Image (cartoon, rainbow, N blue to C red; front, side):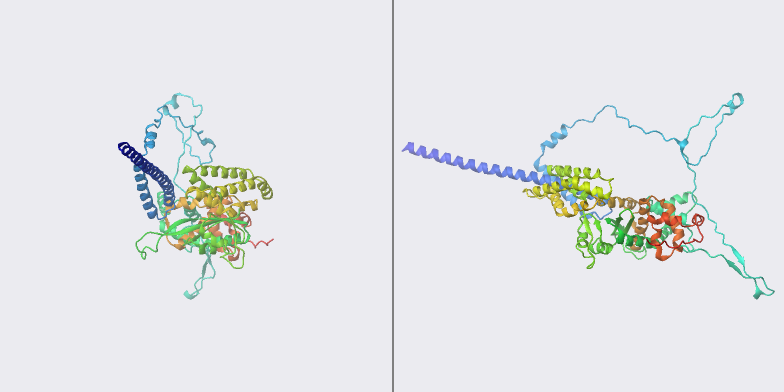
Amino acid sequence: MSEVATSESDAELIARLRRENAALSAELIDARQSLARLRTAYNKALEELHLLKHRLFVAKAERRDTTQEQLAFDNLERTVKSLADQLQDAEDDDADASADPPSSGPRKRRKSSARRSLSESDLPLVRVELRDETLENRSEFIGFETSWAVGYERGGARRIQIDRAVYKTAEAGETAEEAAQFATTAMPATLIRRGILAPSMIAHVLTQKFMMGLPFYRQEEQLAQIGCPIDRGTMSRYAEEIGSALGNIVLAMSADAKKNAFCLATDATGVSIQLGPLQERERGPCRKGHFFIALADRDHVFFEYQPKHTSAAVCEMFRGFKGYLQADAHAIYDALFRGAASDEDPPPKEVGCWSHARRKFWEAAICKYALGVEGLRRIDALFAADRALANLAPARRKQRRDALVRPLVDAFMQWCDEQSRVDRERGRETLALGYALRHQHALRRFLDDGRLEMTNNGAERGLRSIAIGRKNWLFCGSDDHANATANLFSLVASCRLHGLDVELYLRELIHVFPQWPNDRHLELCPRDWARTRSRLVASELEREFGPITVPPAEKQS
């Protein structure tokens, strides 16, 4: 009986040990799964932290309200630190400890560029002759050894004396009632009545701000240093009045673009707007408006200010346009492409931007996803293939695109479709694939015509003038001031597009515009200015003030 009891005791022991082993195995599996989930959560939180840091930097550069983004960033940073403490990531410590120390060898000297030869410069020459009185008395003079330096002289502003002829129109009589009569030459029409600034100074001030990004308070200091004090309030009033008046030219450019342009490329950026006049405004932060840019082929560049970044604003801006419209995939454009702008006219055809598609895969790549790297490789191959066709005529370019680029696009979209069917967690990979597949029709659109571009980079580059200047002048005083600013930016950008001297163009335009017919403003746009200017009297243009002989309108072909 004792042997039987011992045998039963061993069986119970074995069963208990098996149960304990199974429980420990289950706990180990749970622990490993928890550790895997913790690692996944840490990696995703770290990815979001890096991307949110980048987006926070961009938001601050665009002067957006970053309060919510900053709070999210701080919370996410604390979460990442907490997860890192839980993981006790020894590999990071080892990597930090084993990092190679900085090299202590000699630093490589930067290769210097050749010094500028001032002897060939067109700068005004000031000659300084240095002689030695001691050597003059006992030595023979044989010549000079010449060196050069760059100097500066104050100057630039000029007084303009306007002499208006006075005429005696009747002989003096014998009585006071029969006194002689006189007449003074009338002052030609000007944009600013009885203004103190001549067209050349107005053009200089506007160019400094809207091309060079120099705010008015800095110009005020510079002009004061050369003995020409002009306060920033005067400059601001001139900018608003001149910009509002010249807006008729920008409206003519916009109407011409909507009627004749093949493709418009557009984008937008934010701008801070003050709440109102200083005496009336309540305390509080600036509100946000937006500057939209539109590139009309190689004809015009025009900006438009909108208080709201909405579908209604976009539909109103591009109402009546039937061509191709290239934009990013922002939701505000969806209503426009669906035909909400007009029930009669067909909507514009959407052209996607491959740079935006590439950006999604770049975000996945910097988060260490292999799919992001592969997507970048495929998109870069597309860019390289299309870049080789840039100088071809549009018809030939389309033929070569069909032969060389279209197969790469088809292969990329097929690859995206195959990868989207793979079961994976939602993250940077799925976002990149989803963007490419949702917008594939717009992304393929550039293959329809050789004149279309793969990217919307031109419009984004055009916004740099606002983004750079915005860091200096900070805000616009009102919606009216923002509209005038948009008009001036339009003229400056179009001048640069057509290679015009911006300051000279504005000087002559401010002189000519008040005397120009109201139904012919398009002739004054930068695209047509060279032809219009050739028909004007050169001697009349050279003067700051005076009448302008308006040539007859050209016959439309």
